[in-house]
Structure formats: C-alpha cells, structure tokens
Amino acid sequence: LLGSAPFSGGGKNGSGLGFGWDLILPKGWAMAFWVALVYRGARVCGMRELERARIEVLAPSVPVDHPDTCAGMGHTLEQRGLMEEKHSLYPPDKRPNYGKLSIPTPFHCPWDELVDKWGKPCHFDQLLSSPQPL
Figure 1 (tube, one colour):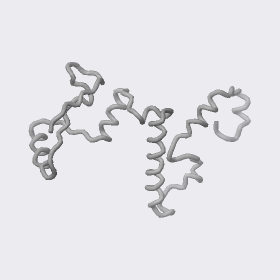
Figure 2 (cartoon, helix red, strand yellow):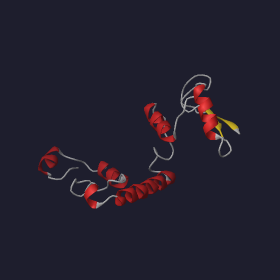
Figure 3 (spheres, rainbow, N blue to C red):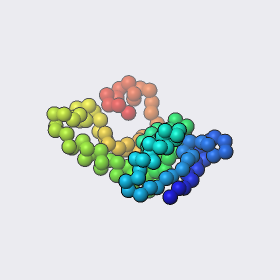
Figure 4 (cartoon, rainbow, N blue to C red):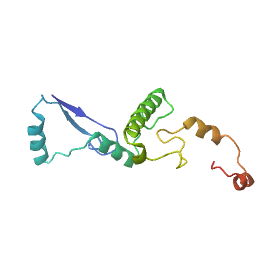
C-alpha cells in the first residue's frame, strides 16, 4: 500500500520537510524493500529525526509544542510517566539525585507555576536580597 504524505513546511511543488510517501508492506518484506529503496536514493528519516528537523525549520508539532491544550497536557503526563519509570529502573547510586542538584521537576515543566510568576512585578532590590532563584 502506497500513500502520499504532504507537509506544508516550505519547499516548492510539495518538496518541503516531511513530504514523501508512506509505504506499508506485509510482514517479512520490509528489509528487501528498505535496502532496494536506499540503494536507489530514498532518504530515510525516523520519527525522532523528523521531530528534530521540525524544530530546525520552526514548524510547530502537535501536541508537543502546545502544552496548554488537552492533547499537550496528556502528552506531557505520558512522557513524564515514561521518564520517571526509566529513571526508577537505574540503581540509586547510578541515577542523578535531582534533589541535590536543586531540580524540583526534572520530568516535566510546571507551566502553571511559571505563568503565575510572570504576572507578579519584580523589583531589582528584591532580586539582590532574595537567596532563592526566581
């Protein structure tokens, strides 16, 4: 099964980032097609690399770049759970101690706290007398 995968991220005549074809093959046929396509000049890109390329061309990605939406919050919670699980698999002496490193939320960004601090006025003399980071 062959399908077109257009992307509106620049380029002329549908040649921008993410433009290409989706090829769905039966089980066991992928390696033969993969090698033949690569030898004929096909460009291969995984999901992680495609995400990095989107960052480079400033193309927003849903839900990653929209943390204030329901989809973005769900994605954040899912990624947070996966990272916490991966972190807990390491023995305590082989994983970073985020408490000692003064990192209160290593697996997610507390957007509510950050946005709350944006609305409060900050004076220069408070910055000098405040021992804690803002």
